[in-house]
Length: 340
Ligand SMILES: NC(=O)C1=CN([C@@H]2O[C@H](COP(=O)(O)OP(=O)(O)OC[C@H]3O[C@@H](n4cnc5c(N)ncnc54)[C@H](OP(=O)(O)O)[C@@H]3O)[C@@H](O)[C@H]2O)C=CC1
Ligand SMILES: O=C(CO)COP(=O)(O)O
Image 1 (tube, helix red, strand yellow):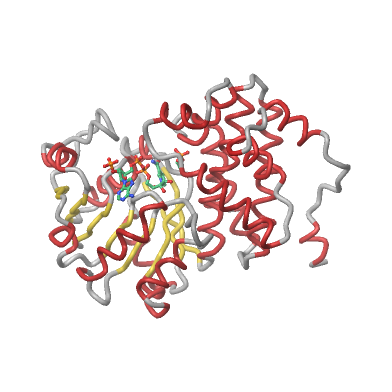
Image 2 (cartoon, rainbow, N blue to C red):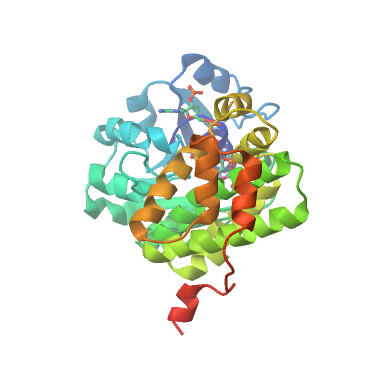
């Protein structure tokens, strides 16, 4: 039995607390709001996971030092935009050998960095050996109901990835390992852009053909950017790549997809985000990926059009026309052709 701290008591932090508690670990959750911590201590998180009775091994507090004290592993479950600050605030209370598990799916907007790079800047590059990212197709609402789910834990240190695998693995929660941190981080972050895009197409009233086309060509551009940044191509054929793309683009649990649907139906970005009531990571990630694509010199047409709809008032219908009207292409990716 390990003592695990989870920083962030939203949907995902709370669902992962359930998984760990059911594995007999003692779990301390940090919430920035007193009323949420109190509700969790009463056995429910009705704000983020209504209807789920929380395991008695879970406690919550707004006192970060108290939550982190003696933790062998710390899970960061706050949205990407809050990661650097909460990490900085947490590091003084963490031991030098604490395993750090990030579950946020995003990139840092100001620096365009992956979150493991943010971690290395704040904790030192040597600490990356005890850092892992846990990602894959996993809606909190289903994990909290013990619906069978498979994920991937990636770390540059396989012993750390295997530690995370052992910590979380249960009959309902299967964890694979992967040394490709870059690919797993990018797969988890970039699929949210494609989910926004497929949501917009759904909101416009298009059909399954459109969705399949967006997902397939979306995966092509995710892979293209990932390859240019050093990821293993095969990671995008795995749980953090196509797996998460499928679940996010097809499920009504997805906040990114739901936000896209509202935009496709005519809401403004602000109105659509407001209607979701939870974090919509893909909005910021679209901005970051738009800039990364330019920096890396790779084509990301779906990201490009999604960016223009979100931030430049392009109408969703015109965006579709732009995508459909692009020049003729060979399907097989040039990255594969170049490699022979
Ligand atoms: N939900 C899911 O199914 C999954 C989510 N993820 C990822 O996990 C991360 C967290 O998402 P999720 O739990 O769903 O989000 P939610 O919107 O459900 O909850 C977000 C939580 O983070 C807190 N929070 C928001 N901003 C900050 C900040 N700047 N500093 C500290 N705390 C903050 C919120 O606090 P408050 O309540 O006070 O606003 C809330 O407790 C995201 O990156 C998401 O992509 C990954 C896999 C599955
Ligand atoms: O990452 C997720 C499922 O794997 C959750 O996606 P949303 O943030 O779109 O709800």
